[in-house]
Image (cartoon, rainbow, N blue to C red):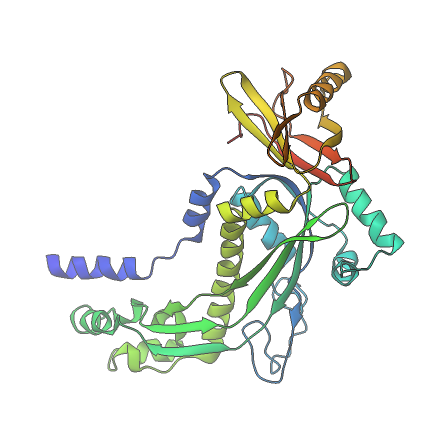
Length: 359
């Protein structure tokens, strides 16, 4: 009896996938010091004649369940939800205009400086965002069946001893879909960082990949020999691929390499540090600063002006770099605050912090 209980427990563990738990762990890491506006969308490209993960030319429905357009199978709201639950940024918001989201990706091409794009980028800056995140495209691709995996002995044992072999994830599939996302400088739309997210192999049990008839037939046939139900597999892989692409995006964005790359590509690196003398803003740049601004709701103008003057007056040199440091005004409260700096050559950089969330 104890061996059967152990086997049943192994079956449960074999099928456990908890994106919520992974996001909870990610949320414990410090967020990036950014207020981010997310635009664009996971619009499908290269929809060929053969079935893909997210697009099947044989399907007749014009929209996915919930009214989501077929060419945007991963809604922007799902992207925002993952970024918020993973606490990737201090502030994150979505571009509210669906038509603009479709158009802005084409306008953000190198060398395009049309007036409408400039107005949009200026509005993003005026609204207090530090970075523009653009979901560029969802490159669709077929589902690759990789065959029976190494769990088949567990499946066979569970089938013989408990009749529960259909619970073991013993077949492996992989979507070839990819999601591309860019992080862009707000004043110019220049790309600061690019993320190309790929799906990972997924193990499915007969319960997840088979029809009702297939599950019933596993009473007599080992589950790993029971054929898959194409529609069931497609629906399951679409759901798991979406979750994995978004989870991988949150992980990539919150990695130390992304933090470092964004700092290095910015006109100036603006950071908040806890010191023995209290929280202080530090700026590191290859050019001297010509202007500094602090945006914080409810902060008296005199305290803001004092901070800005102290930051500009604190310049020191460290080799080729200009260093600046100033203490934050007292009584900031819990509202996000934004520090903006401009260099003598016109470069602009900013960062958004929340009191108590410095690193």
